[in-house]
Length: 403
Ligand SMILES: Cc1cc2nc3c(=O)[nH]c(=O)nc-3n(C[C@H](O)[C@H](O)[C@H](O)COP(=O)(O)O)c2cc1C
Image 1 (spheres, rainbow, N blue to C red):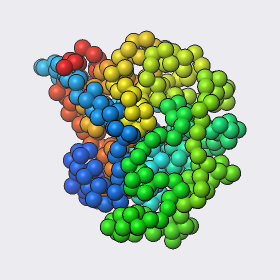
Image 2 (spheres, helix red, strand yellow):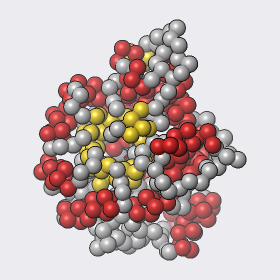
Image 3 (cartoon, helix red, strand yellow):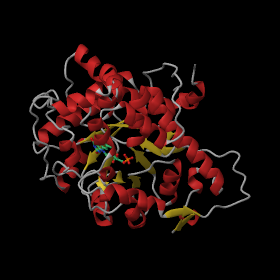
């Protein structure tokens, strides 16, 4: 089976990874189908690590509530027969106004999963953002997936270690750098502790039983790592910090991160620089003053500060404050193409999606992640037809109604 139709953006695709992608045989028609199937395959600890939020999960619930409050006021009798979801980011084309969010989890859900999701993004024609905390190294992703690759940076207290990563990302050809600003300390995710899912990973009767009940994941993912090179490590970490997931880790903490660090990054990184995790217009302006090219309005998918405002609620005020000064992206809870259309109509340049492609890769590797992205694209195209918009540029706030 070939998926040639997906190569519509071949002319713009960089080199590397030229395989004709296999079509997924999954019976999944939306995000919820993929999530449901992933839930069956994954050990509970891993499923919840991806799915859940933090503390009382207020942020997670309000993400969706904020999106659901926004409805469309569609135009009718518009010829939308030539509609397209395509757009551009930093002067280069993208199949739709969406990029794959950094998650660092794909390699736990599928063997070398980061490569699979990056290939899916490449095949669909959208950027893939690799997390600092991923299992597969940025060099391997660049060599084996190709496409538009952006690197997400977590800063450590020892800034030199982070700058090492910036040098590596540059050498490996990453196009953009995204620094995450919303994680000064490790989040309080109690369910991980209940599930025995924490770093360093420990063997307990609970997680052994959890894995035993999910043999497909064990044989497809964990056993393959163990047979190749043992328990995996976070391969982007600098050599001095790179330990296997079952060995004691350096606790994550960067509570001294400040605007001067952003200025330093700006001096060091000549490509597009994006700040992820902004929820206030004044911080957005400061990011601009420090030289950022774009921001992502985000509360980390509801995973960090539980009582944080939903990004979608503050998006309009941030867009209005910044005007045309820089691109504003948004993420969190976007499970449907209609959510992305709402975000763009609200003034965002693009949306990041995290969990959707993760459920896809957990179910079926690259074809599964590609299916997740294709679903977003199909849903977007359909919604654009319904609201009477032939292009991304035709999406504006006039189409929206706040319920
Ligand atoms: C399992 C998981 C791991 C994540 N890891 C990171 C990370 O390493 N760096 C980061 O900036 N954001 C991380 N995020 C947040 C995502 O980049 C993004 O903000 C969020 O997932 C968007 O919400 P969505 O999953 O509802 O689309 C992670 C999210 C998930 C679900």
